[in-house]
Structures are given as structure tokens and as C-alpha cells.
Length: 411
Image 1 (cartoon, rainbow, N blue to C red):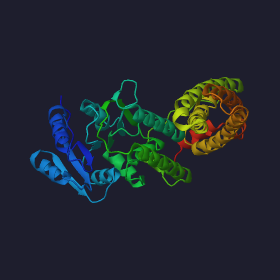
Image 2 (image 1 turned 135 degrees about the horizontal axis):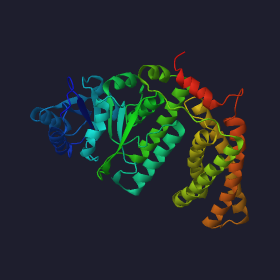
Image 3 (image 1 turned 135 degrees about the vertical axis):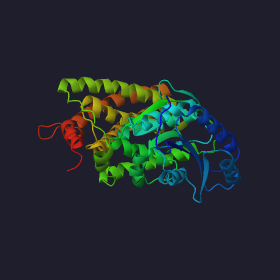
Image 4 (image 1 turned 180 degrees about the vertical axis):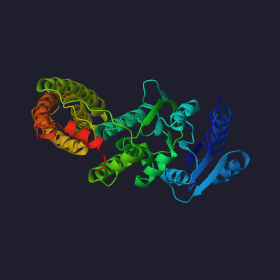
């Protein structure tokens, strides 16, 4: 039976900037798919953010010839601007956006929007990093994407796996509540939206997608990654300062949180920390070997240690010391970063000593020395994490206080 929704059920926004080569083919294909496969009412909006080629002419012609296709022109460049402009004026129940190259298989569109139309979830995203996802792209993009999302999950304590896939949907009422707090208007826009949503207790639904890389994409991956990292730092600072009212959003839209785990015993902490330490050491060794060639030994040591330290802090916070929830999340990561710097000084000093004794030491010898130094740094981390970062205060664990804080979001 075909579901029925009052008014417009779905509006799909396709942000474009100088896309004359693919626009007509993609919009025609998308409209045909929706006509044949989408049971609810829909509309396609071509959101042109300051194109300077023939994109406006083609978009205007498509809106005049294909039913349920509209064209919006924005004289400011930026994907975030285009999405904000279109979503803010929409009267649809569910708002979505797709990249114009349609890299994501459209068969994932119905399951993307279904949990939002039913009210089960608040935001729905496609993930290229899921176990059942099928992705075709180069190793450089794959490495950058996985590294970025790893850092995002560990530093921001979020659970969604793929922040950058251009295949997302959101309930209109949720969008209207969140959009005023999203500052970025470029590529970091939807990542910032997701961070705020999860920190506010909203439900984010993920579906694995089939995705084929566009070889003609003009996106500067390196610069985008740098801008995204700057955005993460900015959002983290805003959350620490309380600029983003996540507790008020939680009180209005959020769902009941999962009760966090109790704090393990000292023996349990030692055992769990050892398991995390083994995993971190192996990850460090693998990352160092991968990055030592293109970056050099010192740079590779710093990057490998940074990546593993972020993951180590997050894993120990939740798994070793039984702390979950937003309370002191960013304080813990900052303190963990201080511990990371101390560990980096220890391991870097070991390289300096090695090179002073053997200037032409082989990479395998460097790795052996660094691994030994990393083991010592790991022991130091346990002492500092237990006695400083994740210490118990006043006879009550941070996990318990976090539960109380989340359970009573508005004082």
C-alpha cells in the first residue's frame, strides 16, 4: 500500500556550482528514478550557488520542462549557503540533498528517507565506510576520508561513521531547530550539523551505500580536509563554552540516552588499558610504516602518535574507565592531548638518541626503538589517565555524574 503524507513529503536539494557538463543528465536521471520508485510526493530543487558557466541556463530549462523540478539562484558561493537557503524556505516534511554527480546509487534513496517520514529517526545519512558499503575510489581519497572520520569520532565522541558522504536527509522540524547554530557555509556545513545533532541527543540513522568516485571532481581534497579540521576545533570550542545550546535542543527534540557503563575495578582498568595499549601500539606501528616514506621519520612519528593518541584517549575514556556522555568530554581530550605531547617528547627523544649514535639507521631499527619508547609512553599514559584525566572525584565516578547531567538536561 502506498503511504500517504499530507502536503509535500520530500524535497531533494542538489547544490551546484559550474556543473554544466553533468547537470542535465543527472537531474533527468534523478527525476525519472523518483517518478518510478518514490511512492511519496517529492520535489527536486537545483540550488545554484553563484555558477559562472551555463549552469543557470540549463537549470532554468530543466525546471520548465520536468515536473516537480525547481531552480533557485544564490549569488554567494558555498554548498552550505545553498543548502541553508533551500532548506530554510521548504515546506516539505523531509529535506534531503544529493551531490550532482550522483556518485551514490539512487537505490539507497527510499531507505534513506523512510525512517524520517515514519518519525523513527531525526537525520539519515549514507555511509561509504560501512561493512556492507561498496565503494570505488582511489587510495588517497580513501585514506584521507577514513583518517578524518576516525579523528572526528574520537575527538568529538560521535558515533556516525561517514560525515562527508553527499547523501543525507533530515526532518524539516529538526533542520529548523539546528540550522541557526550551524556557522559553516561551505563543505563543513553538514559535518557541523551532524555533530550538533548527536551532541543534542538526536537519532542519526545510517545506511550503507554503493558509491563510485567521480574522476572529474573539482573538490580540493587536501584543502577541504584542512578546513574540516579547523571546523572541528571551532565546534569543539563552542561546545565547551556552551555557545551551542545542546541541552535546550535535547529537552525539545532529544531522545532518551543509553545508560553508561559503570566504572570498572582497578584490575579491570589495568586489563582493559593493556588491551587498548596493545591495539594502539599495533596501530602506531602500521601508521608509522605507511607514513614514514612520504613524510620522514619525525613527521611520521608525530602523525602516527597523534592518530593513535586520539583513539587511545577515547577508547580508555569509554572502555577502560567507564565514562560516557558529554560531561568533560572536551576537557578529557585536551588533557589527553597534553599526555600525548609528553609521550611524543619521549618517543622523539628516542629518535634523536638513535640518530646521534647511528645516523643512517634503517627504518626497521627506527621502528623498533620507537615501539620500545611507545611502550614506556603507554605506561606513563595509564598513570596520568588514572590519577589526573579520569580520576574519581568525591567518591562518585564521572560516568555517574554524566548520567545525571544527561538525564536532567535543563536545570
